[in-house]
Length: 272
Image (tube, rainbow, N blue to C red; front, side, top):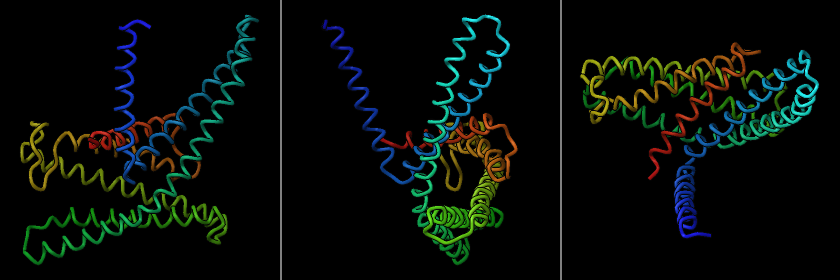
């Protein structure tokens, strides 16, 4: 091995080591683990959907192809794609269960956050601080929707493992109720984002994306990132919350991957 090749390998080893250390730090927190599992799960689901679509397209070509060599090649490739799609779909299901178990601890975070929110509202009223009633109402509804989401999803998950005794129909209803509660949270967050944008416009923050965050406001770059994530989640939550769905699976998976990659990107940026 030449000195230049050895130097390249050493640099790559250092880069890989730094990446693994940062990844390990990013997934140490429950939030980081949830973001990573979400991203990996939705990426696996998207790959499964794309492989299935490609397999179907190849099957159509196989039926219409007049070239025997091409037809034989397609015939050999289709089963491999079907097998790979099935494995990615199984992986997505496994990661979904892992996420649900991980999110059971999220109920504690939501309850603690709700308590802090209520104490802060009482403190502001007691000290006669200016209170934005509309924003407080929206945030309060978000806390309620998240509590309902965690309780519904947790109950459905435990019932599916026979830990709770619930009929299959009730489990099904709880699963959809959880997704719809998440949809409510997402649309409330979009509404708060629009209101915050109007506030930033009045302050002049919109014309200065890298302006330092002001008290009670948000940095424009952070706002844009969060708003786009919610904008991608919104149709996905509606799709998942309706029996049979409303969107093509490929589009829903693509939007979910965009949203989850944005969530994990934010976690990654905060990792030192």
